[in-house]
Image 1 (cartoon, one colour):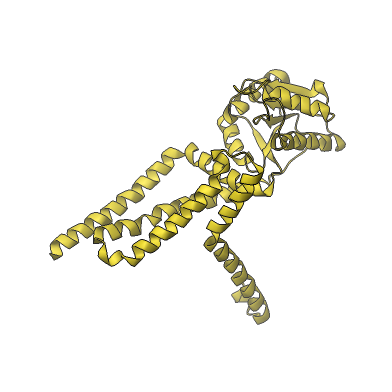
Image 2 (spheres, rainbow, N blue to C red):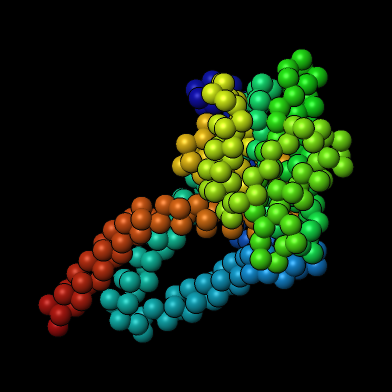
Length: 308
């Protein structure tokens, strides 16, 4: 479309912008290992040293090892059997498939942030998260509650009735009270009416958050029309939306802000979780790719035998 205008200055400017964008993307991909390790250092300084918070570190190390192995094999390919070279050259197809899946995931996560809010909900669900020292709402969880209260107050300002907030989260083995109760205490301390609070304190995961909250809302609404929104952190609402659909809950999510340095780890964790939600599909696709790779290996072996 740009070239069809025949406007040389316009084509030149747009061409330069395109090359700049392409250059930035290429630079990011080339230096991805360094960016991941830099992020890992920041996360190590500010967050707990759990496995889920070291995903950028592990991915960065993996990319370095992959680069080293790839260079080593490329430099010695003439000394390796033909069938092995065929096998190695086919494996990146699996990597390309996973990259395509990650691209699909990231686009969906991004687009979900712009879903219309529609300030007419009569129930809001806030998804729980672990408590600090077993009884204190973390900054991450507090952001979810703040986002729900902010939404509710804006809805009231627009002249609509105040919604009820369902705080959803059970009590973990290392927690002194349920996440739901801790969230409710936080909301009340921040000015929310205790009469507009419903506690769902039995759930252990996001799917149960949706299932159990739906049951409480149906019971509380007494058959009246229900408009529901759920709240979590921005990186989590896409997967939470998938669970809401699985639970038969007609609701869309609103994401609370997350510290920028925490997003890479969180998105990698979310991608793995979404991948595992559809593991049968991905196992089938990867198996098909492996079948064709092994077929090419078999053809290479056969060709070598015939040539001898």
